Image (tube, rainbow, N blue to C red; front, top):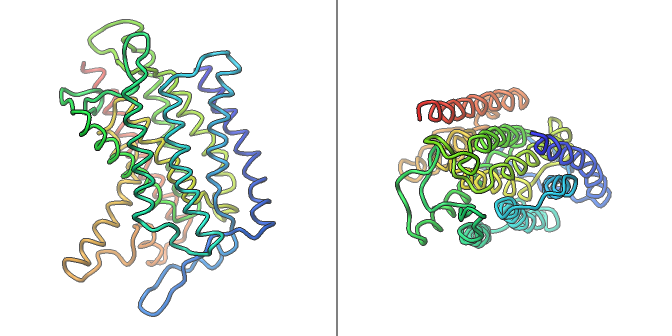
Length: 355
């Protein structure tokens, strides 16, 4: 737990220091994200008050996570692990894809940013590279960072061939990153929900470390490659996101942008793959799944029937159109995320007790 506290502390302090510096730099140069405006036949919630708010704040989060991870290992003079480095690779790589998207939104004032196809290609390159590398670098016990078995609360008997495993990880990364990206539409909404997800993985990884097969082989032990390093990464992500929330909560002084949402989504997906809890993602990332499903249902319903299920998708904008105050939507959606994560952790612990 000492390493977890050190990592979270460093990342939080770095986020609290870097974010206001980034705000001042972006505001001084007038770098702010374009705001979507309503037009004839196309109505958006009124976000005029957000005009001029700097974006690209995810840079501060990524910097804080990297500083927290390496700072922790330097302070205790502990070698880094392949698992930790690969999740940082995934996070930074996807953050760079988001950075390109934010660049177009800020410098070109194009509210849609990168074309959807271009963004998906960028995500795929990073995800496939991460998936392939995760099957390399076995530790002293011969365990690689990822297993080709599909996992729920631990690895199942379903083992995928390499090609299907690469596609499976790509799907998890793409689904999670886009879920976070779609949720990042109200001040603090995605940030607060992501903090809960990362704290869940701190608990899962710490528990797996205490019950690791590398410590004692029992019927219920966990065969994850580097559980303590996973807990450090998750703690750094939670701390960095927590520090950023200070400036991102309503009324936001900065938005995380795609730089932050893609990076955070990648980190959550990576932690799920390496902690062997892939099919638990619908609960540990519950709000992001619900938000993504609302968009899928809206688009599918409109194409099939010509009618929309919601006044606007993603789901949080539907409640905005109903007149709910923004802060009320955010807090209630945080509660939903908390309930999902509570259910996920309960299943995780119940499985260990039963086994």
